Length: 241
Image (cartoon, rainbow, N blue to C red):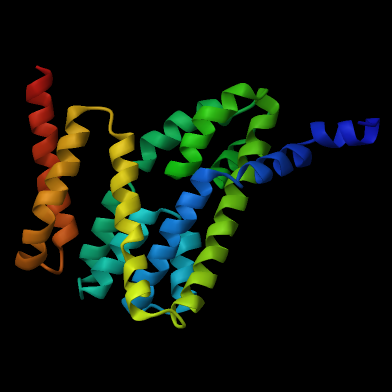
């Protein structure tokens, strides 16, 4: 490696490119497969390609995207939809709080953290917690930025291609792709469960979801989440004590 190449590798842009290359990974492929399922879900619910892509890039949280599409598709009110999407995004607060001390370097500015924190979701957060401690602090932010921006772009491209391809697919295959999203949620949440309360909340959601879909179809996800999550939290507290 000559001096010019070595200097480029040490520069912020060089670390940005390294992060971009790291985005081509198994977790990224799994997320892209789930986004294909989301594209099928959104198309089935009547969302246009532009709306589906905007939800993917601007919301950048697959559970929140699915909650939005599901509630709007079922005719829920704007207030109920906003509340449900907001509650589904509360989990990002502790994730960002734990991410900032890891990614921040000695000269990192606040506006840089604010800009890059937009991309913090479960896949990027897990990647950051696993990979960034191995990298010197000055290079962590550009490395993470390269990974996050590339990951978002790849998933946006996957949504565009999937949305357009669904029109040419057999109906049975297109319908099967819709189930990629809930399967991804189920496996990701089960793998991320660290306590009894997490497992109980997941089980409560699976049990309460179908009856609430019949009883309160316009707010089934919201009600099932509140009731099941609250009950799981209470039972978990009792078991710990």
